[in-house]
Length: 165
Image (cartoon, rainbow, N blue to C red; front, side):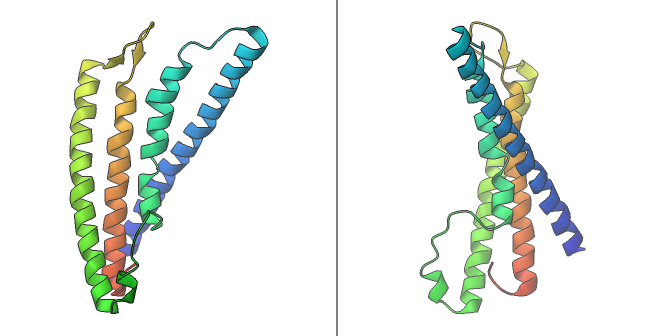
């Protein structure tokens, strides 16, 4: 059962990371097209700055969080932990996971309430045209949920193996 749950979590996080990759490609195409229009036609694509700032960059930063956590590729400083006995390393890893669950849990809860509030209000950015930003608010709770699920999966794997990851 744990293996099945871990597989589902992994695929959810791969999906959000793939979505972040797609967003990166869209951002590159959008910016390249905008630069081409400026260079060749002395024009502009209205809203490029808003799209990049409010949609592309937000999605790039937050949608990949769970995948990075799932693969244990977050930045760590474990110089001293590596010198400790295996059971101490496991205890420290479990403590770190518990702290991570609390941290990402609070971030998830707050960003979810912010996204719900922004959606209800139909939040917009100040611009010379109508630019809705409430959909971008959902990247945060999705990313934080992915990180929470990845921590749970990694914690379960570490406990079953009786070894810090």
